[in-house]
Length: 159
Image (cartoon, rainbow, N blue to C red):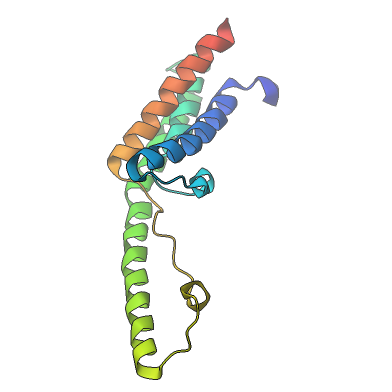
């Protein structure tokens, strides 16, 4: 199979791009602000990691069957990625939130104590990325999106 006819690969890539793109309108409806940086950021609704691993697993299931060894490997890989998205990465984001608050408080103390010259906040510090992981619902919808998009692409591919 050549790379250009590798359906599970293209389904996974399409799912990643779709999940990243759809974050912009979802965020717009929630906040009434367009944030194009979401196209390349981690975290948020839906999980592009979950969309990718479920898309590749669904693509493998459709091509190789549910009884294939590669489907088993892909399924275990998908479970690990989705568990990590709601566990370690999510908690790292929560810790980043606390650390950023500590940095804010420390910077405020320094301003008050030393009459810190007025500089833009962005020059004083770089914040840690807080949106690293996902809420379970974000992982669920990312996974669902990966499966549904792959089934749609498979249907269109087979026409």
